[in-house]
Image (cartoon, rainbow, N blue to C red):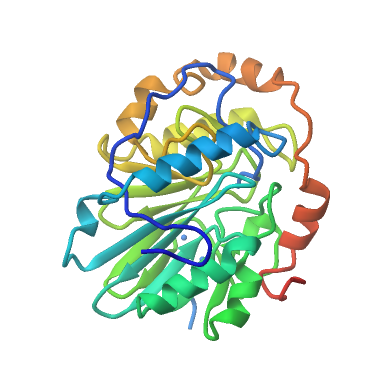
Length: 307
C-alpha cells in the first residue's frame, strides 16, 4: 500500500538488520511519559541523515507481514509508517470487520499521508493517540481531527497537554473487537505511556523503550531511575515473544521483542545504578525542535496547527 509521498509496507516480526550494542545508542528526542474511554535522537538532535535514510530504506525493502496478526484475511490490521526527518514511526491499527481504527504517534508533516491511507483502506479513524508530548516533532493529531472528522485526540493526563480525551494507567482504548491497554511508563517524561494489545502480543513503547536503547532523561522532567523501573516493571514483565514497536529508530530496525530487549539492550541490562550513571553522562545537545515542538504539542491535540 502506498500513501501520499511515502511508501507504506507491512513488514515481518523480526529485525531487519543487526543492531548495534553500545550503551549510547537509541536516544530518543521525544518525551517519557489506561477500563474504557469515557462516552486514553540519537537523542537530542535530528538523527544524522544517513541514519534516517537507512531506516527508510529498511522499510522500503521489507514487503512482508508485520506480525502473525496481520496475515491475509486476518481481522486485525497493522501498518508501520516512517517519517524520515525525526525518524518517527507512526502506527495504524484497525479492525477489518468493524473498520474502526486508531493512529499512534502521528507526525504533522505526514498526517495527510496517514489520512489518505485511512481512506484508501476504508477505515474510520476513532483516535489519534500520542505516547507522550514529543520534543522532536509536532504531532499530527490536531490536523487529523480536521482531515478526518470524528477523530479525537488522546494523550496521558500526566503529559500536561491538551486533548479531547486524557487517559490514565490501566485504561483501555477500544477499536472494534480489539483494545490497547495503557501502561504508564514515565521516566523519559512524566506522561509517557506504553500501549499493549489486549492479548499481550505487541506493545507500542513510545520513547521509553527503543530497539537496543531508550529515550533520554535529561529534559522535560525526565528521571533515569524512574525510566529504568518503568521498563523493567511495565514492559519487561510482558511475555518474551511480545513484539516491541518503538516510536523511533535511527539504525534501520523496525521491531524487536521483549526477550531480545531484556537480554540484549545494552543500557537496560545494566543494574539500576549503572544505568543512571550512563544516562547522567550522555552529555547530549538539546533536541533541535524542542522549543517549537513542545509548546505546539501541549495544545495541538485540540487545535489545528498551521500548515
